[in-house]
Image (cartoon, rainbow, N blue to C red):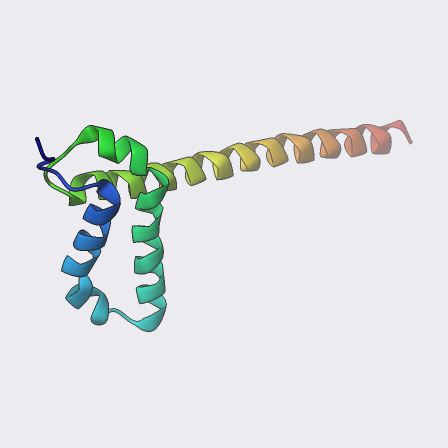
Length: 100
């Protein structure tokens, strides 16, 4: 019994070819970003394969969204960590100045 859905790695390539004309009309810088976005889908290849979704673009777009959400969460965490570190530092400086 054969598979009715191709491996997801092949599906990504097929979908990227389908979007080739769109990519051609982007600016060079945007074309690089577009290529990078499709490469993100390979990071979640296993999960996308198990989803066995016959509409190939759905898991690709969700993989891109998930990757960007992870990046946003990490940036947010770093901003909050740095904010509280800087706030703590400023409070210490303020205490030192008030002691004079």
